Image 1: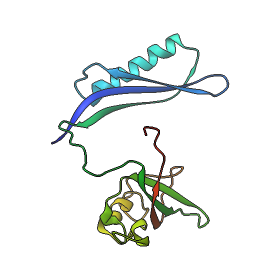
Image 2: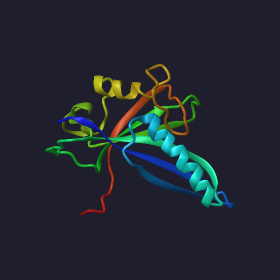
Image 3: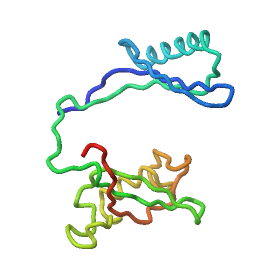
Image 4: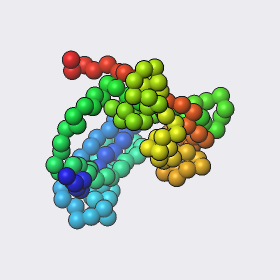
Length: 164
């Protein structure tokens, strides 16, 4: 099993007179590298704007990565989620991030009431939270582009599924 590089895509966001946006995604045909994919996207942007009255708002180029030998997990359900609650710089505000099918080991206990409480001292939980914290590696932003100060708590929750 390995994660491998896949297809390249270009996505453009356009807005109309009422500031209503629309997204269009296009697969880029076999670019040699990121620079070639970017050049293709820039060229397509110009061509789209040449045939549309809408205004350009934003765009992006990205490459898809995928597992080339996928094995389904033995016991993971997307409806079972861990909710991580972060403290934002404004003390009156928090933000939540959700992770589907949390590992049992990140909960305080394997059974009972505490099996629904995220252990915020668990090494895997700390490593995950560190990606977002202003004092951590801070590689990603949450909420409205904010850097949380700390992970306050976490809990297990369940969401609905329309697939029976």
